[in-house]
Image (cartoon, rainbow, N blue to C red; front, side, top):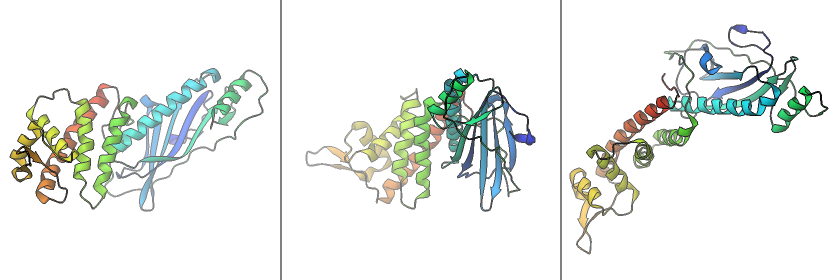
Length: 291
């Protein structure tokens, strides 16, 4: 079973996951890196105009009866890694050609694609008849070459605690909107503020209130709240007017350049704030997302 450095040593009672990683936005230095603390390795290679990664992670000394729990832990580790890489700027980072296999104490290797495969391994380990199995997996091989201005691979495996998955997905959605020619700063601001709203503890500051007012302005057909109107009188005085009841209100217009400029300003504030909060939470909860 080949890995970094061409290790062909068989690993008995090992549960191992392998996949190819695509849509790598950051240009990394090619070659392999071992993340022993996460029982994982990652290798990046050039593929014509893009880069391809190969990820491998494992759990050793797994008895057949413990395969279900170990499989769940492996799946969570993989998801945590994928989220970490996406948070680091590879917004569309994804996996293909996934393969999960188990090497028994006797050296037999089985591919696991379903709960029935796990059941077959457990039953056979007890000497019971079970005529359901999968083929042996091929070893993973990776090749790479040089690339212009590469970024070193992280020294530890990027990982995001899955309790933060919803926030990471909001970040990814907001970042992906950068790729459109239309003006989507308002939609980005909404997503960034969702993160700030849930993770920020200090919500009495003027900066937070202004950010909330900016979000409220773009989120409602009509703004009438005193806090929002006061904010708009400072930022966009022309947006505030008297309605038929002689009360102040304001309406957001995406086509108005002045409105867009203010939204863009606060979208930038919200983005920086949200990412700092998420980085803090990732580290506090035992994850790692440093380049």
